[in-house]
Length: 123
Length: 462
Ligand SMILES: C[S@@+](CC[C@H](N)C(=O)[O-])C[C@H]1O[C@@H](n2cnc3c(N)ncnc32)[C@H](O)[C@@H]1O
Ligand SMILES: [Zn+2]
Image (cartoon, rainbow over all chains, first blue to last red; front, side, top):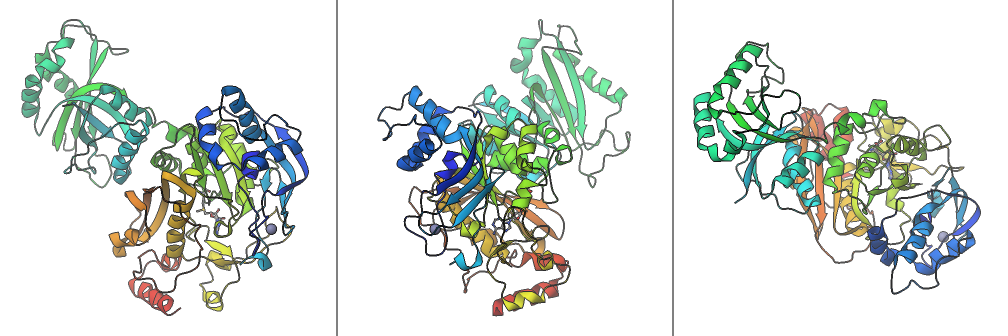
């Protein structure tokens, strides 16, 4: 849980925090690898929603360097398998995600991130 | 011209039958023509399909189908039925020579005594089947259904009114409804993790079919609670994302989150993409157009009141003491700081949900959710008025509990335009006040007319 696909979709949403609020920085994370079902169509359909540099960076921080700096023109099976692994099989179980802009800490426990805001942080 | 097929439905949720057939046809990419005058409250209906395979596909996925037959004839008496079966001879003559067979005679709302069942079977002897009778594994099964009028949902004693049926139907069985047993499989009481907000298995399955769940799709429940619809949606192959304002609902007491434990029991833990704790009206989604469907049972306060981050305004303090809102929002186990929450009125929640869905869904994506409503006051406009540009109603099925009910609403995003995320600001001057407005208050007052009026007066001022 907190797979990298999720990390790639969450931005800080504290009041007034509208720029430089993504990607959230990973801190003190514990990672687990778990198999997921491979579905090439899902990956091909989803790639347009991904912020590529953020995904590559997060994967590298967690020790996976399999992805190229730019998504390739030709999405062959070899590439899609790597993408599958990075997006869906790396799980952050413990740790925190921190906003690069306002430093809000979103803690992760037992795989579930707490994205709730404090009272003074709501618009 | 296609062939006619006889559908036999389970004796429940009649308002959900046709929407389910249509959704499953859409999942498999074929057209289903529903005649205008079809009475879906009856347990039998005859539909024309282009291929027998379509009938099989429907029977394998529709929760409400008990069986599908190739349709031969119907009649208000056996004389009428037999005459028509004779006319259909070319349809069944291929089975005369050398096909093993058996006959089943059964009834809706009635049990036919065995002796008469045998008589009925014998009355078909003009069909002259020469193959052997095989009760265990026949090549074909001929089925005869008698439909009796509903006597307040009770089956009558064996002999009472025997033979006084409304209509009798006859056909060749082609497929038993094999999705129906899923209702047992997903039984909440046998689940490793559930709570008092868990949605019953049958409805969770019907909802999953309304989303068109299938492999490769990504589906979101923004009020996931204990995850009832996540399991059924994932069972049909979709990937599921869930969030809830209250982490304890998703976690339960063990280290491994309850939703993951229950999903493992069903073999779909790998399909639960992630669970997050947040208020959906203050959500952290970086962008929209992520999901193929949103499936949800929004909080309407009977069991789990809707809340959102923010301070309550003063007038909210005058709520009845039994109201769940007055029970303090206890400290979630997953956070050091508990933000205060305020109640969230149902009609604004419903229109916010449609706006959120328009932002978060891909084009053609579906929003499937329940809307509770006061039976006597409901108007079609209630549902129409919560729509916004680009969102259209696909289905609206009532589950009736008497003075109140809930409607399963299916909405399609029928536009490719891009939309901004909703602001979740409460609108002050709403043109139409739907019957589900202030539903929670109405519920706790037992839907007394005068009280209901008082409440809407109060909230008109507020
Ligand atoms: C009717 S329950 C859903 C039950 C769920 N279908 C299940 O199977 O358990 C509604 C859920 O909405 C959550 N909720 C209430 N207000 C919310 C909000 N503003 N944002 C997110 N979740 C909220 C409640 O904590 C509750 O779990
Ligand atoms: Zn921030």
